[in-house]
Image 1 (tube, one colour):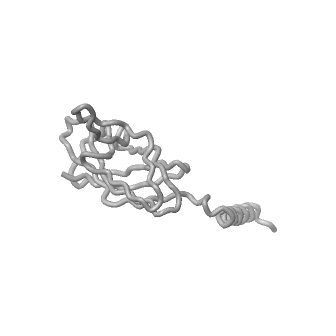
Image 2: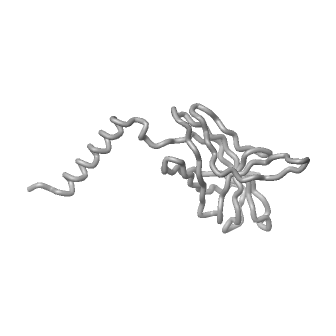
Image 3: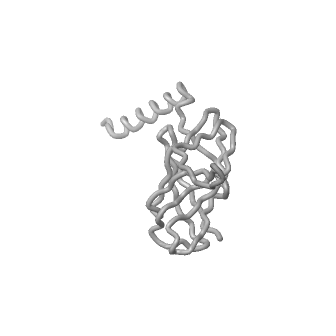
Length: 147
């Protein structure tokens, strides 16, 4: 007797493999992320800053279109800029990483603005963050809270 569920599962897997072989550019992007960390601040401060090094090992540009975490009300990418003698932080709608390029999120430059932590952060905590890429794929990473 033919097992319909098994037949459809096998057919679906074969079709997916065929598409990946026929359209290699169709494969989802994957970024390499090093040293992801969050600066710890007193509980009375409603914002945290996040930093990391992001490398795109792929052959096409990849854009981060949003980030989220259950630990924060919102996460945005911002850039510290000097304009008319005043420092300000401006939102970056999407962060594009070119092929084989590395982008540094660091104090005084590009960084994550992590708003309204649900609970106070403590040195040594790890916080899961989800990254949404322009191809619709998602990546998860663990960020460490540091001094």
